[in-house]
Amino acid sequence: MKIGILGGGLTGLSLAYFLGEDAEVLEKDDVCGGLCRTVVKDGYSYDYGGHIIFSRDGEVLKFMEDILGENKVRYRRNNRIWFKGRFVKYPFENDLAALPKEDIYECLHHFLTRNYPEPKNFKEWCYYRFGKGIAERYIIPYSEKIWNIETDKMGLEWVRGRIPEPPLEDVLKSALGIETEGYTHQLYFYYPKIGGIEALIHAIKAKVARVERNFCVRQVRKSNDRLVVSDGARERVYNRLVSTIPIFDLLRSLEDVPQEVQRAAKRLRYNSLICVMIAVRSGKPSDKFAVYFPQRELKFHRVCFYDYFGNSCVPQGKTLAVAEITVNKGDGTCEMGDEELVEHVIAGLEKEGFIARGDVCATDVSRREYAYVVNDLHYSGNLRVIHDFINARGITLCGRFSEWKYLNMDACIRSAMKTAEDLR
Ligand SMILES: Cc1cc2nc3c(=O)[nH]c(=O)nc-3n(C[C@H](O)[C@H](O)[C@H](O)COP(=O)(O)OP(=O)(O)OC[C@H]3O[C@@H](n4cnc5c(N)ncnc54)[C@H](O)[C@@H]3O)c2cc1C
View 1 (cartoon, rainbow, N blue to C red):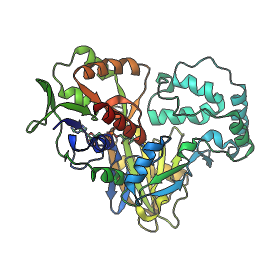
View 2 (cartoon, rainbow, N blue to C red):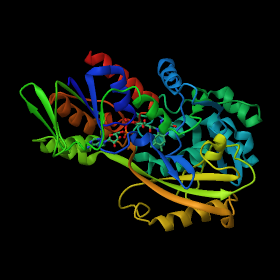
View 3 (cartoon, rainbow, N blue to C red):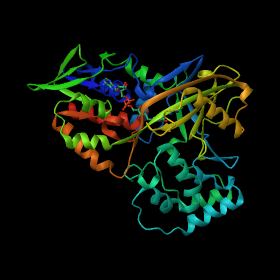
């Protein structure tokens, strides 16, 4: 076999698809998909954090559209931020008129009069870009929940292009109540008709020649000009190797990793995710998919309502709310038991008027170790040391936790396309 691909998540499978017969995927789990898996529990299904299909990259979007074929529905975004007991359209700066009058004034005044020096960290950037009003009411508290780190400890590499600049005209219109839309590249999105986001994985996997499941990569070594991969029992030999598995797993499998590289790896920061599913008996399906919660007293930052997709994920007459909580080992929340987490989410959603405790009919909790790469202030320096070392070992890195970048599904597929071209 010419090319070995470590990891059968979206990146690994896409890469195998683009490479064709020459490639083989090694996946540690029984089911492929990684972060794009869908949990099925008591007739309900939900993803590891709400996943929707969108892209500015026309070629990649078409790839996802085509591979799903008939199994997709196009939706118009209707997400909201929950702020002082009212819904504000997402993104926040495009619906200032929905705020109480004092808040509209504060947001608009500070947006128009902002005058900050070039930002050096994410917190400064929030003030610089949005002004104190919007920054302190929404962007900073929400970001500190999803990133689980103070915003002044975050760098700026990931921000540009991801959080667009709000045009002056839009902010003025939004304060006056004239309809505007932000983040227009995700105003319309797709979601599979059946099978949750994992349907995308199965559609790609069906066209991939070789996938070896239950193969947990434990050792990678060089032998002559080849790379030998082992799970402790089986061995595979390849001419070229691409890793899409988390960078820590790869480093653990390599011999003679220098101290400097190990130190840099220890300093890399990432977040884990807990999803808390709360199913309730209800009369009507939700007209919103995602609701964002900047309130610091609530541990969850976002709740996705899967009944928004009709009955594809949720039985008739039920609502499925899945709360997302970002955690790190040792932060206290990560150590909370499932029952305690469920209780926190039910109490929070009931207090905010979203559900009635008596209507809850099923719950579930699922955890994902690797969810978000965190761009702290030392991100680039640490990453360079590790990437240089791995490249020198002749291994190509591709994918979210392998490249260690905040890549969405479309960016993973683009990276796989590029890697396939480079290897040909
Ligand atoms: C909460 C959340 C919401 C998201 N929402 C969206 C969205 O709406 N739209 C969007 O486009 N993107 C979204 N994303 C991003 C998307 O999930 C990722 O970009 C994508 O799934 C990453 O795929 P990957 O293959 O690079 O990594 P992974 O999915 O992490 O895959 C890595 C694979 O390697 C395997 N593996 C690990 N260790 C080993 C080993 N030792 N041996 C063999 N195999 C191993 C794993 O089991 C896994 O299958 C979201 C992500 C999160 C966390």
